[in-house]
Image (tube, rainbow, N blue to C red; front, side, top):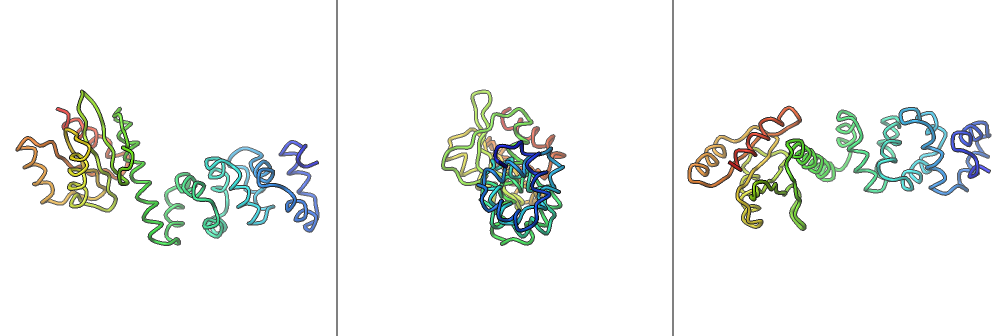
Length: 239
């Protein structure tokens, strides 16, 4: 009967059940059935529905929904409950969820996880954010197959610039990586994108390289406020 009833009506029916009958019924439902019920209603209004279900049922539902749907749903959980359930979620759902959460809540969650995993997540989010910033600059971004994380290139005017995005760097790691990427990809230039202030020696090195005719540069990009400098430096490598 629950399966044949519109989801919001089915949730209303479940609300009135005694706890033991509710548990027995939800144990009989498939993950897809649970996802259908929990996703009933508009985003932002599902927190009450989620409180009805046991942790294991929320995890099962999250596994059955698409990563984007699951992330939108799970973001409505109280922070303490989300931290408790996070490790049990499939990796695609965890990745989508970390992208969906507000920065403050995401950082609090990452602070309680394995630090190697947390660093990998922060690095991926930074690379994705840099990629989005390049696309906002109307750049055609390509990620070459088999490339290390953070390596991409931009094509324009029959030329290409290899780009490396490095979180937690001041250019000392990323500039050599960008030059190596440019060599492997046979691009016209190399651009290092980092989130920290650029090391003075690295800045001098890039200036000397450009003076010698090599298109090498480095720019700090931390968030959308740095879109302008990123666009200008990239454009200079094609001039």
